Amino acid sequence: MRLCRFGFLMAACLSACVPLPEDYVLQPAQAAMTAPAEPLDPGYLEKETAHFRISAYSDIDAYAEDCEAFYSSIMRETGLYSFVPPQPYRISIYRDSQEYHSKTKMPEWSGGAAYGNALLLYSGPSFAATAAHEMTHLVFNEFMGLGGSDRNILWINEGLAVYMETKASQASESAYYRIFRDSILVNPIPFSQMIVLAPQNESARSSERWYAQAWSVVSFMLARGGSFNFSVFLGRIKAGDTLDQALSYAYKDWQNLSALENAWLLYIKR
Image (cartoon, rainbow, N blue to C red):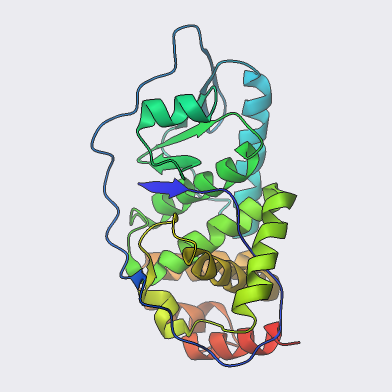
């Protein structure tokens, strides 16, 4: 299960890489939700599209259009055009934050959740950012067949989700840019730590630094290699390659993770 909190990062420059603080821990394997969320109240509307089965109290056509647009953007940015989910994703859109938290029992900081084949969201200003973020997790997890819990690729999963979030929301992009500028530019996280360490959850203020860097690195990979190379990279990881092997296969300039890190550091300090 993935939980999302709205807000965070980005930009470019550098000094030395500084290790993560002690409040970063190894990310545990994702657990399935132990109890299903309560459904929307009777009288809600439902609409099925090419990729979703959406439930909401109102504006169902607008939500359907937005969700399909987010999905198309994810496929375009990742180059995963040939991937077709076996069944529609279920999306429940609660009336507001109060109903969402009451019926899902999610923590107060949660703005949305993805689990299994479903998204739990609510109406409000952060809908676009949260929907794009969590939808990315659904697609990534199903394509990779890993449930998103493989520690070595968690930074890709989250970095890509934040990347799509910022594409959907200018407010989110501005927030992440500020965090990147104020934190990552002066103290980049060594890749050796970024890959194996992650925030315990998104509620901690310090977790923003890790998310900001993951976003920056994935953004750099997409900017330099394009969606096709990125899709090849993901495909090689799915096939069982190590990160170094997948990078070497998909990107001629990066033979391993160290080469990617050096290129990214040079890029952000320009």
